[in-house]
Image 1: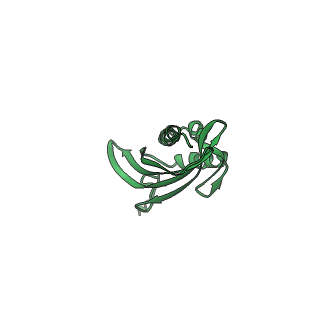
Image 2: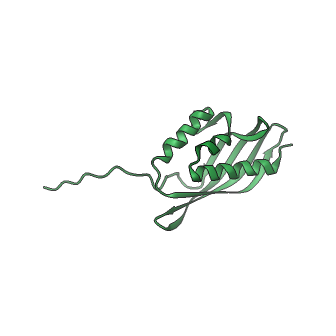
Image 3: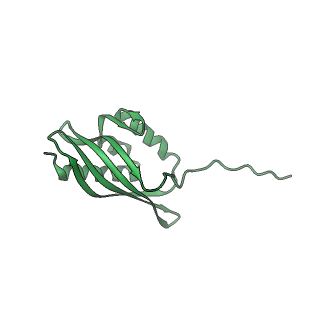
Length: 140
């Protein structure tokens, strides 16, 4: 049986690492053979997150809730949860998106790690705050 509290803490650590853009902590949340966002392998996935962070301007707050076990096992489990994402930009808070995560988690080196994730969002994904290249203006 999966350690529910440890899996729930894993998801919370992932959110904190993602919000703080802490790549070392983020890497500790992923299994070595993770497959996520069409990318495979922990180092490649973490590099993809790091590249994405370079474009963002708003502070993010990911909130995981309603976590429950879909499939249970001693070394592998599938958990489902709600994801709620808030953006803080220029002292304004906004609800950005909601959806459902279905995570496959595995016991690796004595700790639970995310091995894969299926994401179903309630609205189309839009980063909302990606830096844009300056627009050239013509002055004739």
